[in-house]
Length: 377
Ligand code: NAI
Image (cartoon, rainbow, N blue to C red; front, side):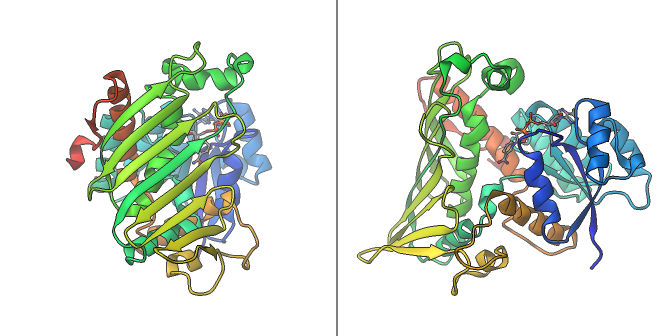
């Protein structure tokens, strides 16, 4: 099978998420990296592209140049990844979809619900794939958890409880460091800080495993470091459309928690527990029975969990390989196969609606707010 042509915007030298995309996209032989506008500084971006093996004429200075260059080539890229800062996602994703490219956009997909709905509609109209990098949902044992819920292994889900809380912005003496400060500044980050940054991964995961959508929520936001305009801690209660009760805590001042993303799903006949720092394991307890540790790579897992694991049992694959699983599903989808685990623009706009609902709720003292985008009401 011919490899697909892939390009990247953002994710340049020293960026946080860029390496995970390159490791992920190139891991399974589906894609060749052939084009890129990797940096907000044109010269650095071109130099970095060439260091990554991109030909000189496809090492672009900026994304507009890349769009023009790629759209007229016979061997144009099949997929572009947008891994730039949040406020640029909408403009770039929209332009590439309109020009007929498939897109993998980093989260959050947009800054507003309206932009999210626009992207969803453009993807529908053009028939192009717009995926969003909710990569945690592509860990094999998360796919296992979702398959277990779908197959009724824990019965109807009563409760889902999730946390994405770390302590890396908990040092008040570092709060003015520009790399930290922008995340709590509405001019740079938008309407929400920690909830839009990490909370939406947890909320997406809750919907993903429960195979249901968030309907309404009530939020309490706090800026525990007083100079911060946006929240660095949030507690969000939510309900899924089939009645599941949801609880979510997200924080960036939880000193001592490193990555701090975990989820528990409690059904009528069993419970499941997963932690991102031990992603190979899914803990399963049937009602009245013993707790069992299920391992990535063991026999008897559901197909989606087996398909997305490469190395033998007890060998960690980790975060970049979860991103690789998104690229596997994307490659299959581009080649015409259905991959219903792939997070698409609809998931991106649902997150945006939840962010804006949480902000409105927190401002109104925690009142319950409809968290669905208007297009899905
Ligand atoms: P970063 O600040 O570490 O890197 C951003 C990169 O984009 C830099 O190389 C910069 O030069 C480049 N860039 C900025 N503006 C550009 C433009 N207009 N054109 C081309 N390149 C440009 O940022 P980080 O942490 O890598 O985040 C990037 C995106 O990835 C954000 O939207 C963030 O929310 C998301 N992210 C997602 C994660 C996930 O788990 N899915 C984890 C970390 C970040």
